[in-house]
Image (spheres, rainbow, N blue to C red):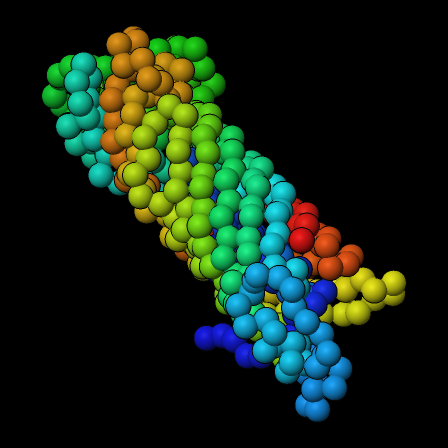
Length: 365
């Protein structure tokens, strides 16, 4: 979800940077996704503190007794405050975004080896909720590494159509599609149209009759796994971060190959509040690239993925998926209570079609 670094003083403002890291990774969700897509993180950039003491008088007597980050003692001698090196975060992400499908192949009673180009997906929008757990560590004063695991659950809004006369052949695959979609339309007449008429009053011959349109909702469920790193820096109360994360998805009833790359440059400002609490506000951009091939079985009558390839109206499928809008604007805030506890909230969708809300609580030790 993450050049860019200066000296940076790490204290309460650091919780925000780490929060950013996680938010970047958490996103990927997908319909997988989804993102994802991913991935997508932050922690506490609020941990960046003010300029170092040029005379090295304030921190010269401090001793860093932790294994990480490497080079911590040198940073302290130069007047920098460091955050606690290890963190665990609990995060919830809601993501909505349009997906593009291509290179679709289907099969009936065998592998997906028949290419389909007569069905148009006018809409394929994923809506997913992903609770996640993240662990992270500062390996250098300016470099954080992290890993996350999350559970994906959500829906896909599907709108399909096919123009009149687009297919004139009849074989097991086209017959299976025709019979499966007609079975779905018979059970959901308000979601299917043949020409201008609702089904099932005028059921269409999908391959020779009137143009048809179908609206459906499919459920998705699975897990995602993210690995990434983040560079961070600060100058006075200003801070900047760059998390870079890669997410892979494991769906419950389908196989997913490929993954999601997420990069999120951010810049922000930290305010000192009463009682030692810091508030950091930031903005930036999110680049998400979902590049996945999904294979499995799909029951057209129920509009759901299945592992039972022998069930009626079920076809094997293979399809390439990518997100429609790679870039999106982001804005967020991080509240650092103390060196052990911080919380963050981030919204993506200021610019672009993707909509994402992330809430996170981070603990450090």
